[in-house]
Length: 507
Length: 117
Image (cartoon, rainbow over all chains, first blue to last red; front, side, top):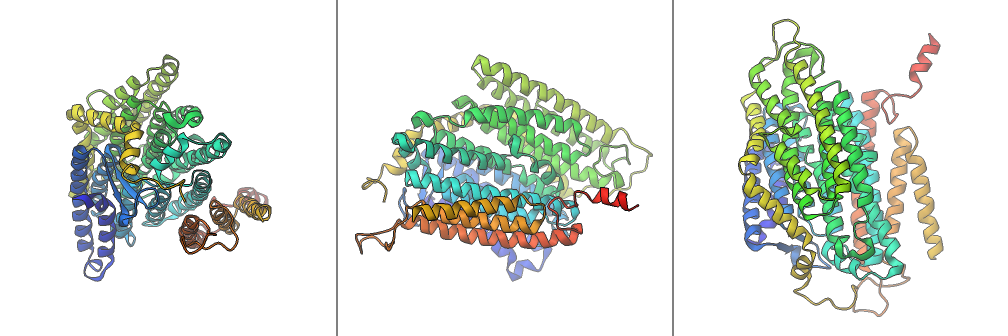
């Protein structure tokens, strides 16, 4: 059972290898089955890991039994494991959707998908910053290839920008890591937290520059204002199941920001504590505004959903900048909700585009969709949830967000921005919905009906929204626990590093 | 030695950034390669520069920090893979889009067409 924490990383990798080997590789149906069964298994494992973490409180695993400050460790606390569960849940839905036919439009869909899941899980579970970089690269190289899956001019164009930007991001990441290693002598996250607390004054500026370079990298991954221009083009160009999986990628940036600026540069970091907050709060709020304007201005539904991702990222990042336990809890609940709902909307957009003939998902009057009632209900559920209207999870998420802002000065600006932009989002979504479903020219509808597997995948993701409301009690408690655990840096240091005495000062 | 090393990294970074800001995919790719060389040297320097130091502890009094060397190896391997991918992607973009501009279209192509009419 102690090795359970490795499985979210190892299982997708093995699955990808199995899919590429002969008995499975030559038959599309076998590839699909292996991929789907493995993802279902990953979901079960993630939930088991969550139960284990609930019992043990905090699990760390030294890979190859190399002890903590020198070897690479994996760390599972409530925060990271909840996000691993989220990834598994999302990946299962996306793979089901892809298996309905999208996966055969290019080669190696399933292996690449599994490799990306491996990278995402690894990024959530790692306790070492260099290892985080490596997992970032694993998930990125898989995402580069997945982005151009099925081909086409738009995808290639978006991919060039996406790849170049992310390679630059990786270079900055490495610069930051080298600066931090050069001054702190370690890249283990909790060990860094310990070293930062006792940092001599002359090194502080260097560490600060390293820390702020990390902020640039994570802001690029999360798509925060000056670094977000790649997101709408990339997400709207990607094929539907890939875009659905990409919905969780921005959350990795948010997670990394949360981890680095609470654990390493948290309350104990002296002068360096909270150094990113002054940047992240305005940038996050501006991202919300820009995303909302983007929602209003979008000409097609996929772009609109991509802009909704921006709105949710802006909301999360401005909450991360508040640096309180309540806000961290709200961030966790809201990321789960927003990831699943935006992913569902990407899939719905694809089905609508397939059924409207030439008009595709452009917001112009076009042919009637083939299944107006089913798609209409799905669209309405998704839109209500993402906009934060009462009965669904978006409402509770927003409520938690707004409640966590307690400082009156910040309350004014954060509440106003979030609420006004929600209004813009509602207007944009209702305009999109009425155009797609009501402004129809002619009565005939020629598109194919959605495959049962596609309907299942969308429902799988959408049903999460009411479930998040029904089980809101235990789930908010869980996010609260995760937040408390995240802020309890001392326990983490004691559990991970306490078991052995550190000889001398690093090497 | 430190000054020379720092100047070298600085110059590589400068060239890398300059090339990355060019409009065509090939210079951009070269720029990213230069930047990754600069990064690799920089990581190497983060363990302090030691002349003739062994990376194996215990065999000698005079040793160099082994960890940055391991980090550099990882970074080099990843950098290679990413560059290789970018090369292929750039060729694909050249074929798909009909030109090698990073935005997929030449910036003054519309104007040139209008003039030629």
